[in-house]
Every structure is written in C-alpha cells, then in structure tokens.
Image (cartoon, rainbow over all chains, first blue to last red; front, side):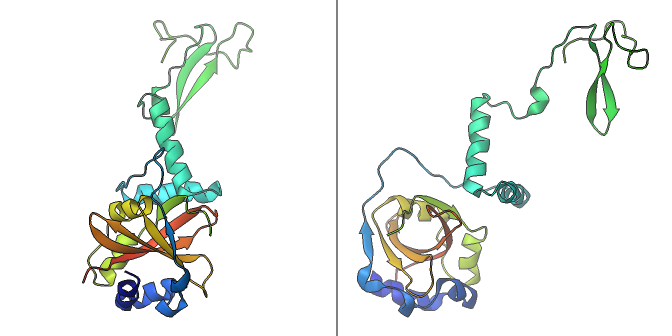
Length: 134
Length: 84
C-alpha cells in the first residue's frame, strides 16, 4: 500500500501538493501501524448549511477552541434540555405586583417595575387580565 | 508519535478531491479509516503533517492530516484512494 500511496500522490492538485508535500518528504521507512481504536466514543459526519458552519467556526475562534468542541457542546446542551431548541421556550414567572412584560422594540421584552415602593416614574399600570407567566 | 485523538475535517475536504479530478473519499470513509487499523507516516520536512493509510468499506485510502492548534486534534485536509 505504501508504494501505491506514493504513486497516487502524483494525482494531487498543485494546491493539495503545496499542503501535503511531495512523496519524498515522507518518512516511509518508519511508518507506524496503529491498532483499531477501543470503543467508548463514536464520530459521525453531518452535513449542514455553510452559514451554520461559518457561525460555529466563528464561535470557536472567539472562544479560542475547536469547532468540534463548540459543536459537541451544542449537541450536549440540546440533549440535556430534552430537545427544546432555544431560550424562547424558557418560562418566566413573577408575582403580578412586581411588574408586567412590555414589548420594548427590536424584539426585546422587558419587565417593567410595578413594585408598591417604586417611584411614580417607574410604575406601569397593570392591565386587567395581564398574565403573570409567559 | 503524537496523539491522534480527534479528527476534524477541512470545510473543503471533499471539494479538494473533486478539484483534483479524483474519486471522492467521503468524510464517513475517512472516519472509518481513522477508527480502524491504520498506518501513520510523518512528513520529515513539514512539521505537523502526516498521512493516514487505512481502509474504508473495503478500499484502501490515504488521508492528509494537518495538526491544529491543539496537539491532539487533527484536521483531514484531503484524501485519495489507492485502488488501481
């Protein structure tokens, strides 16, 4: 197989050759054979949209870690949450006299103060029937 | 001998092969070779570059491995099969 490997390296594109190098650069005489890996973890291939891949790579770059680590953590969190996909499913509960949730624009939702000891500027009238749980 | 623990793939792993006009070794095939009995060949002149010679679904393949920033993580850059 070593001979075949050397021969087939002739078929690499110039760009690949720039990265992989020439056959003569490899230490064929000291090739090391490794046994099959023990079971305990597994690896699979997943095709995703290029934009998602770019986002994962950017996260990995920001965190100075690997793409594998970021992808693994994302999957672990998804499984740990029982398959709930995002923060939009988080339930927020609070007493009615604390305040109400207001749409603040730009997709944000804010809790407006309605404490009994809040200043008049802070207070927001509670709409009858306004849910306390979202 | 470095630790060959984790394998990542270059985003253009399979496209590199198509660019070279070769029969494509898929990522899944490279993974099978990564986990099976394999031979590692070191590049003497270029640090952190190795060839992985293994078998996937009955055909012999070679994968070019590049060392990443983490010593135990390797990136598969391109591959080819050695069938005649």
